[in-house]
Length: 240
Length: 88
View (cartoon, rainbow over the protein chains, first blue to last red):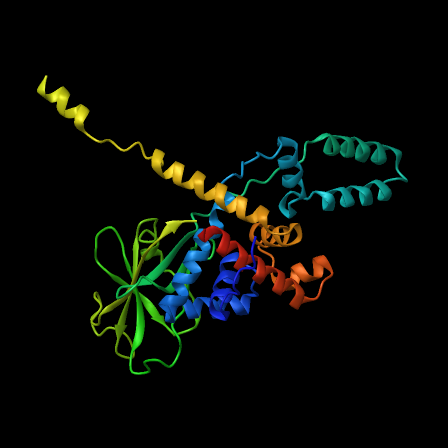
């Protein structure tokens, strides 16, 4: 292959982001740059498309059953070594009394013969995520959101560069199936927030629910049930 | 049998990927694998490892016991060649 021309610094950074070799700090820089610079975002997208076919000929290989059992046993919740230790103590303490020793050994045998108890933690709910993209010009992700059902919280990161528009704030809304927007909170530019979700809103957070961000005066929309400013980004929650 | 004819005319999507899209995907995949194989073995391996294992330059450099700058320039040169090859 002939010597290819070197990539520009910007394209090399885009390619490295698509390849996934950057540190977490550099990744954040790249995400912020994608939000601010549509050319750069397009370069990242082009590199993702170039590299993505690498995964096409992968074949899923199911893990052997015995491996699953071993993984289950190795989980903290299934660890019964503490009860085995307790048993050793009782065996020692009752050694002076033959009758008690016999009883404890009988108990030991009974306990020892019991199959390990596997704790199946019921799934707490579905993890969801959404990428909220700009509504003007090329679609660029401005916010990313993930719903964590164990914490019952929506974790939202603003990719907007801080200080661009100090006179306004970004307010996050969820629009469930009924189409009525519910305010979730204010998003500080460049920051990640975990928003605990009240029980009343949990049913709204399902795959397919829309999230939207509006530009509002400081303190948020003066209306309770609707944004007052323009919608800057929109995205849909999807199962991860 | 007017109704039957109409039903046959309906273009009912099966939810699968279209044959055309599959062909395009297969072509892209072949091209990428061809272009990867044109790279020298070391560069190909570094790029594949980075992509599939999601490891950073630092981790790659440690793993290969090679200075960070060297690994970085292998990858960047490799990506430039890959782009050139995919564009032809």
